[in-house]
Image (cartoon, rainbow, N blue to C red; front, side, top):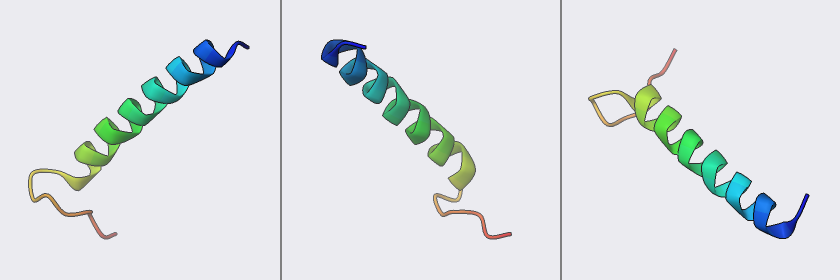
Length: 34
């Protein structure tokens, strides 16, 4: 893959992780503890 593709992939990955993290934290704004 080209460096541009890798940069784009990383950006999408970080955005996805950020959304998942926000969802996991929930409305309380703190990580859930199982």
